[in-house]
Image 1 (tube, rainbow, N blue to C red):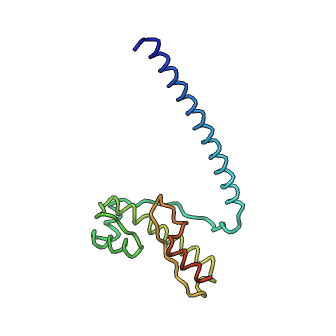
Image 2: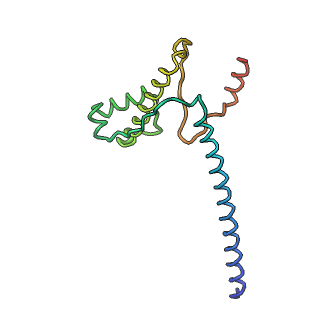
Image 3: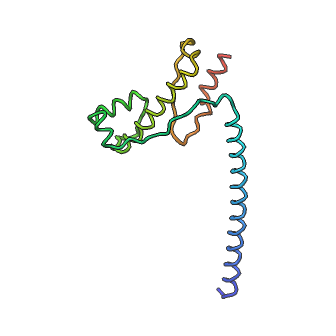
Length: 150
């Protein structure tokens, strides 16, 4: 292959990469604008006013051992909080998961105190989902069951 041909190919690849970079930057700017609009709408929404939400504090393994003693007790607490693991967790994974589980539990208790009408309804809510997985879409069986209730 001649040097001129390789040079033309390199220039063409470079130009294609530059066009791709420009498109990616434009997409990023558009997404940032959408997030800004959503954030403004969320801040203006009275339904999202939950008061001061505490900052999440990740427990260290030492704190976990001090509070709950054994690995078995920590696993039992995680199970009670609804935390499920795909495999046997390490102490570090357990500490992170329990930190989030306890945070969500406190958040829910605060929410229920702000909305006492929930206690009068006699309903239960279960949080079910995996981080990073959208849970806003119903499975076909769930959708059919929900439509029958209407």
